[in-house]
Length: 296
Image (cartoon, rainbow, N blue to C red; front, side, top):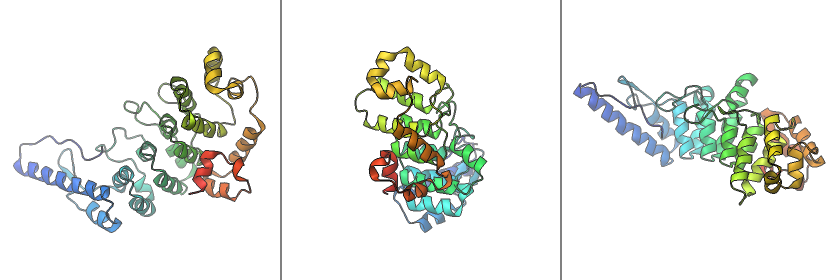
């Protein structure tokens, strides 16, 4: 849980008292966000100079990025929206080492997925629309810490935790479904492994799989397809005949899938949900994961 760096006493009693006071005020801010206090009260607290104690005796206030992490943990939508609207770049910047072990990760997206904060994730993705396209793509596809998160992207995490709504949002806004983690596994590999290791209660797994495949018009990576062919009987039973023959390359996708892949690929990533709502499609033609999004 984020909350301030470890402190090594210098032997000076005044340093100890300062560090102790910072801990108290820091925890008070954490509690205030947890208790969903009004935004104005939280901002008054956040900007207190003696709020945050860092290693070496440096005293500072919490950054918008660090405050957004607290808002994500405690699902404070109003505060998250305020931070993203008033400090769009600072709110999505990498937090200090006290909050993030890896300074190259994208902790806000990962935190939103991990805690299933769909509404805050939508706000983050709206904010990313203001970023230059290259920066937006880099942020969406940024890998997590190699040591702690094994280099997972937010899409990997959404598949691993079966966050179907988060997955649809990330993919619709341009996240890459083909990214690999530090072991070379794709998000699809994560889902297939989940289906194989736990073939019961497949609803969420299949919902995530269906959403992911709609954003993969280029087909499966050769290595994944090869693994499916190597163990035909197991995968045939786990996936069903129609899906297995498609994923293994023995048959093309069905017409519905091809149509939806073409349709979704034509939607602009910077206004994905709005564009989807504008399409004159009957409800039964909308993928379930995406349908749930536009009904909110």
